[in-house]
Length: 179
Image (cartoon, rainbow, N blue to C red; front, side, top):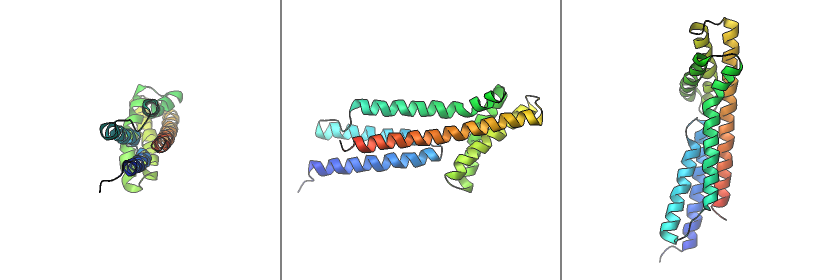
């Protein structure tokens, strides 16, 4: 006996919902979780069109999720550099904050999953900005410390914002999968 279409719809909807919330967790690890959720929704959309001849999601819904994801990427990419710049940093400090954030996230992930990743990225952004401003930018320890603190705060805010936006995308996709 074949599986009824409504059962497929529910199963695919649940799958998209679960994968979208996994995407939130991935975003907390500073991985591309929002894009993971969007790819899952896109595959469900393809399946629904291919097998049911109708889309699972409204195209505007998917477009809005992509727009939110792009905004999250821009926020994440620039926040530690902007934080460093607002504290008086140079391009060297901005570069140090980005490199430090990546290194800190990797190290933090091994020490304490999720929280360690977020804190590691923030601490790494601050340390990277501080080191480059002090040694390459010729700033005093106090000036370099302010730049590092600005970079760390910017990175922490960016990561929390990206996780929040990933949760918004997950909520949108979870509801839209069943409407």
